[in-house]
Each structure stands twice: as structure tokens, then as C-alpha cells.
Length: 352
Image 1 (cartoon, helix red, strand yellow):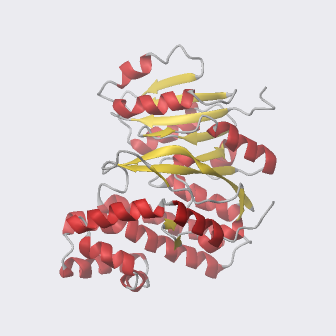
Image 2 (tube, helix red, strand yellow):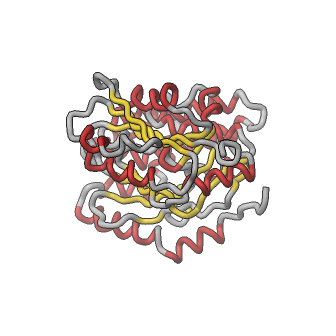
């Protein structure tokens, strides 16, 4: 069985989210794949987490570990991969996300076995706390994507979607490769950094365009709680740039373009919302924000100032009008019309 169905570890780090954790565990154990384990690493929760996991302990596919004290979210996640996982392949599933496709593991492993890729990304359903239902924000990509396509499209936005690899909940990867690269040790946005590095290092990566997981978006998430945490996330683009320079397959200009596009994307999605929450969005705040952006790259302030979408968000962020525009934008970007437009515009190569 192991030869036909390589074992997969679903790794769930958790802390004081018992009300979410049950969905993550139930959806994992419901997977229609014959060889997997579900591992929960509890970072010394003080809520009802122990009571929640107790009913799963009799299942041989389920493992539960609890830290004696809170180690921080990073070290807790690293324990899952570097100490607890006993599989050839793995995926992280944060305790506030859950799987929506019972065949997620099966589909991903079929792509891995068919094409020999080291990582498979998958589409999410994205649900903000003010929404009753989530929205499909698939990138509408083929089963396998060549490196060249990613290099041209990373951090570009078209028809409402920014092309960026899936977060950890949407990744299934070869564990030995991750360890060989010293990745996924719990750094801020380490899942994105690993994904970008693999895109640079590997000729092909896999993709499942039908939603595999639901990601809950709320203020308590890393990068959404403070400007300084968001700043930590931007370091991934410098790290990826440095990693790319060591490869013989990508020119320096391409790497620099990706780095600047990444900074611009993070400025809009993470830096700006946190900055406004802490400093407001008056003219003086904007001037100070531009000075902060210059620390990342001298070209970044101009790139942000010349982007109408970003500047509109800065002026209106967290106002009544902004909330209406944001809800409208979410509805439009997941519409069938824009989905069709994205499919027609992507110009993806066929075959492998």
C-alpha cells in the first residue's frame, strides 16, 4: 500500500481555538485516501482543546501532542514537521482552516505521482468574518504549471485575483525536500517563502483548481494584527531573491522584478491595513507610510503612489464606503464572468 499510496501527514498547530479545531480535525479524518495521519500539536492551550481532541484519540490515524508551555506559534509548527511527522509528504492545516474536499489528498497525490512535482498548490474558499459563506478564489490554473509562467505572473493582479502561491493549507509537499532546504521552521510567512523558493528551484509545480480548503480571515492572524508583524513578512522577498541568485536558471532582472512586485503586493494587502489601524489615514500618516516603504526598496513609494487601487484603499480604509466597496469587490472577483475572463487571459502552456 505504501508504494501505491505514499503516506501523508496533515499537521495542525493549535492554540486556544477549540471552537475551530474540531472542523480542522473532522475534515482531515474524512479524507478519502488510504494512507495518512493527522497530527495536532497543542501549544499549551488553556481552553477546551483537550476535551475536543479526546474523542479522536482512539483513531489510529490521529496523534496528539501537547507542549508543557507555550513555545510561540513558530516553534510549535516546526515541531510538527521536524519531530512528529512520519510521512513522505505533508501539509500544514492551521487550526482556523479546514478542508472542503474529501478527495483533496487523493487529487494532490495523483498529480505528484503523475508528474513528479515536489509541491501541489490548491484553490481556497476564502471567508472573512463578516461573511456567512466563503467565496471561491481559484487561480484557475492547469494541473501543472511551468516555472516560466510563475515568474511572469507572481504578484500580478488580473481580473480581481493576485497570482500568488497558496498558503500552507493549500500546499502538499515532499517532506524530505523541505528539510533539505531548511524550510518551514515557523518563520513568519515561511509557507509562502518555501512555495516561492520551490517555484524558482523546480521546473514544474502542481495545482488543483477546484477549492480544497476554507481559509477563515480574521484580525488575529499573523500579519493582520500589527504593522511590525506584517513587516516581518516582507523579508521573504529578500530571502527568495537571495535564494534565486544562487541558482543558474533565473536572471537577476527577473528576480528583482519579482521582489519589487512582492513588496508592492504586501504593501497593499498587509502593511497598509495595519499601518492605518495604528496611525490613521490622514495626509501626514501617508507621508510617514511612504518613508517606511522606502526602507524596503527606494522604488516602492512611487510604485504604491501610482497604483490607483492601493491609494483608494488608503484614503477610504475602514470607512463605511470602503466596507461597501470591499464587499462588492469580493463578489465581483468570484463571479463566473471574471472566472471566465481569467481562464481566457492566462495563456497557460498545455501539457508537461
